[in-house]
Amino acid sequence: MTLVTDFYFDLPQELIAQHPPAERGASRMLVLSREQGIGNREQRAGSAAFVDARFRDLPEFLRRGDLLVLNDSRVLPARLYATRAGLATQANSPQPSGLIEVLLVEEVEELEGGREQGAVIPASQDHSPGTPIGNREQGLVWRALAKPARKVRVGETLEFRGAAGEPNQNAAILPLRQAQGQNDNLSSTPVLTAEVVGSGEFGERTLRFSPVEDFYERVARIGHMPLPPYIHREQAAGPDSAEDQERYQTVFSQKAGAQQVGSAAAPTAGLHFTPEILDALRERGVEIATITLHVGLGTFQPVRVSELKDIRLHAERYTLPAGTAEALNRALREGRRVIAVGTTTTRTLEHIAAEVDEPVSGAKAQGGGGPVLPGRPKAEALGYQSRPILETVPGRFTAHSGSTSIFIGPGHRFRIVKGLLTNFHLPESTLLMLVSAFAGDGDAGRQRVLAAYAHAIREGYRFYSYGDCMLVL
Image 1 (spheres, one colour):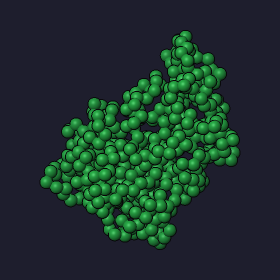
Image 2 (tube, one colour; image 1 turned 120 degrees about the horizontal axis):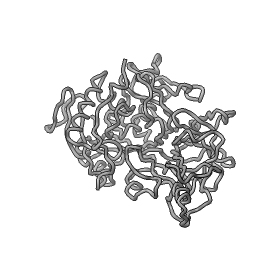
Image 3 (cartoon, rainbow, N blue to C red; image 1 turned 180 degrees about the vertical axis):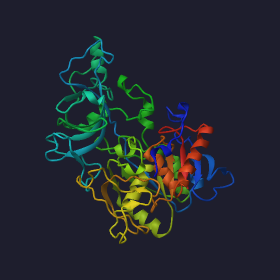
Image 4 (cartoon, rainbow, N blue to C red; image 1 turned 45 degrees about the horizontal axis):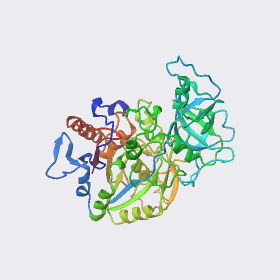
């Protein structure tokens, strides 16, 4: 029995990075060996062998012919602030603005008859990430997280405002200043309005936005970068800093404009890359390809069960482009390594290994030590089918889009990924469990990763989204 608490470690608060390094690409990098030695700088702690390096050294640790796969999803300014329509603000309240924080997580289609229960289904398997979902005449429907959720009830209307003529000026300021008797050219007309049409556990709400001509342009105008809660910002008080707007986005993210549906959190392992480092990798003979996985609840939701076998993740949408499918086929056929940048890329690649056309007879949908492809509890009812896991290296991939709810923990046998670049993750998170599964078989991987984390803490590495990184080979 593997417990969530087996993945706990104690992290000093001062090691949680509040800002990115002054220069992109200047992060430290801890290189962890899964099995063999990794050079003359190697140190050891128990079964873990590691090297202290810098991210700019990444080309030195990769080989000519390696295939490096990046997640090019663009972060949506998905954190919005709203007020409840028709409700008076109490100026003497501890929160006089009466603000509701709304984090847009996933654009969805409403199930027939699902209005009362808030039952929703992710986009169909053939939906491409750049295409808006839903009936535009009726307005777009989004799954979101609301805070404080107890104030957001089905049937209510939320209003999102911005400043007159100012980009990225959030709705939060207007009701706050009005409650304080201020009026300084802030718009009284909502930029967006949404009806709450469904509710779920842990603050989940389903919102139907009133039709507007350009929904994503409006979100970009009033939204904030969805920084995680351990990065302390007063986002409701004004526009995001230029630092957060730039650095919480990868340099290779899709730049399709406001119409591009994107992620509710950054694929943080990619934040370290610069154009110069990408060029250095190509010069070394490393092939670079991209997939798209839009980060949502499946990546960053907290674990609320005690055993790994009970973990179920929300589905997230992905796209495997034709060029990347061909690159994977060539690399696997020629025996070259596939290096995944980030846990989101890893989950996508390992998921598509189960989606090829010719699974081996008798293969299982469960890994030896824990669930590999479980959906949410009602996954099949929502249109997800568990498919067999290949017992051999996959031989053919084709371009497609789909959804994945794959959870990777100890016992998973990796079929595509041979190297992993990742940030340092939260205790007891599914991301830490994935890295532990990759670092070694059985419990050896967990012990190896926790030993490396202990070393990183002693050496003052910076943790989480804006922190340093680890390369596992």
